[in-house]
Every structure is written in C-alpha cells, then in structure tokens.
Length: 131
Image 1: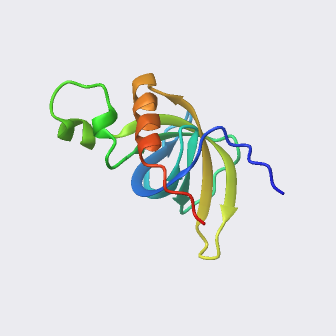
Image 2: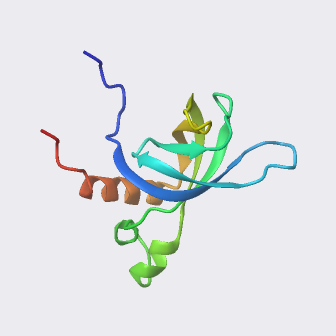
C-alpha cells in the first residue's frame, strides 16, 4: 500500500499559466501552458521542454474562481483576473508519450495573502470522494 507524502490534497483543475526559468543570464523566455492539478504546496504542469530537478520557475497562475477568497478592495471581478504569482521548484519531470513533459512543481515562495486565498479556494472546491 502506497503512503501519501503530500501535505496538501491536490485538486484537479485545468487552467492556464505562464512560467519562466529564473536565472542570472538573459534570454529566459516566458512559456504559456496549463496545469492539471493544484494544491497549497504545488502543482502539476504541462511543458514542451524538460527542466532539470531543482530548477526555479517564476509562475503566474490563472485560478478561476479564487477571487472571492482574496483579501482585496474593490469588485471580486478585479481580483479574479489577477494571477497568483509564485516561485516554484521542479521536483519531478516525466516525459509523456506525446513528447511533452509533466513537471511536478513545489511552491517555494508565494505571497502569504495569495497562499491563504488559494488554500481557502481549494478547501471549498474539494471533489467528493469517489466510490
């Protein structure tokens, strides 16, 4: 029986994001993709290229529906369009049959208010247990 090592429950959620490798040299080009699931600790994203384990990525996630959980002034619609910005570390790389890659990303740094809003959003959207 496998033992779950994750601290947070993953929620299936397909949405878009942009990401870019953090490096000291110029030339890092942002990529757009989608992620397949997200938790308070990280996410699983599709990538056209592999990144070495430990690579740091700047992430800008679109999280549909998280606006109402944010601490903000003004209409919820304004918060809804703002991406969640995070620093993530590549902790898993798997090549798919299509030639693309799945990257397991662990959040390293997220604005505390945004992380709290994400956790509240995820708690409210936990899928029912499958039978």
